[in-house]
Image (cartoon, rainbow, N blue to C red; front, side, top):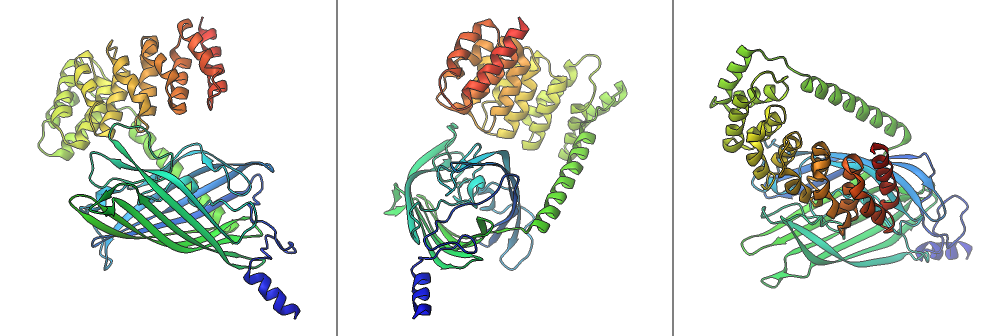
Length: 493
């Protein structure tokens, strides 16, 4: 009799256990502790036509604070990409559909906050994963019900982002996907996520997850974007975190000229303490090696007059590799003598070269550029190639161009080039102050914060009133950011 009652209790979820000895009805919640470091292995596999795209990497959480109301963690992570054919042969060049997704992914290190049940989940930064998988920062985190039910469901309206200059761009989901870039197009969609506890023991809680996302607009009667998936998650009741996941999805893309179905699997695994230590050591060693290599690459190169003559000839070489090699060497050189001849050659490469040559030329112009390069560089920051724009911004920041502040300040609203615009505006000094001031009143809190940081570096007394107004606005980061800016400006008086 007693055994039958216990069996029924387990079947109906009346004894969800979060720790040995927990009482029936105990609610699922995160039980991580301050100082914990959680290291997950992440894997995404998508079959696109005859090509298999595999993305693998790590997602790391370091717990900073834990209270009854809120958990604060710092997240960082990265994923690399490899492509093979279905039968395992390596793909040397990016296939026609391979270019539609972001390749290597790196999450900006930042805070993630949530309640003890995963409610009010909010990352400081948002790194969109491909295949509409949402934010990298929140992939292994879920919200639990407040009432201890064994089945729960969440419905919400989201935005699906499409890059206008690419037929099949990365498609992040969630309300934070749209960064307001000119080449982005947001589509409204409905998302439904359901969970059901299918097994609960002292060691593991097995949860079945079902997912569905459907855009509101349709093409020939079918949703333009639709995704559905199902799989299992394992929650560790003793450690109070998710241990693993294995979910299969099907992503359907429907446009006027093409329909495509992409099978996707998304899995992760929490590493043991010992495995985590080894992984973190490997990551740190890789970082140190990369930093050393970068330092060597950036070391100044002494260029004699004869060297300079030879490099200018190599820039004109039809061999792109040799031409870029000469340009890259000029970017590391210590400029001596008349810059104009070198600037002219680099401008030619900037305006006629391929993608990589243009990036190299723009970087070299940061060293050899003269005001003559101004119009071409200002034109490049209006282009669609974000990497060329970034390099051009670095060069513009080092030239005394009176028209540059008004051209660069609008890039504060673009997520992809915001940091580069900030650095360029800071390099311009007080001449950029008037151009930056209006962005203290932007509707995006991150734009306001970065504008205030620029003014902290270059602002004068004329900025003080608007900085104080921003500081009193109650916007995120406003109080502390404005206080630092005011202090810096006062110290420069």
